[in-house]
Image (cartoon, rainbow, N blue to C red; front, side, top):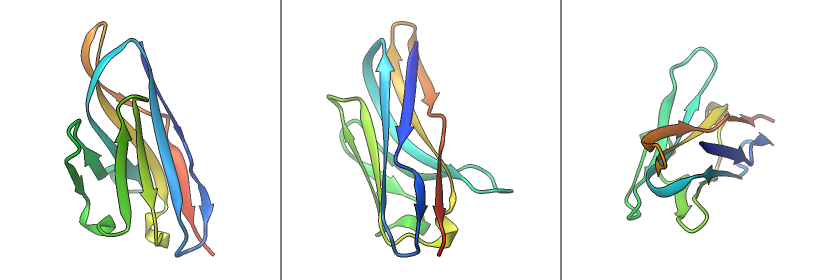
Length: 119
């Protein structure tokens, strides 16, 4: 069984910064792509950023230049550094990891962490 645990959300003023973390635990042999998604009230879940095992990244246009995704393969952890936050970044943020474990490969999701950008 694989579990993802997120941390780092909260309330921040516009222009501020937050760092999200998502650690995978359990019977893990390898992890391919790791990513962050978000869902605002009344909207579809959308991709924020994604990183391959080799370190290649891609970002939603709305966060390019402000957010940075990174990973620590030894810790099975993905991070999202969010700078210059805007009210429109307010959402529940979910991490996703493509994990190879004892029962094969599968996509796993974190529980979600609330990010609120407001003055």
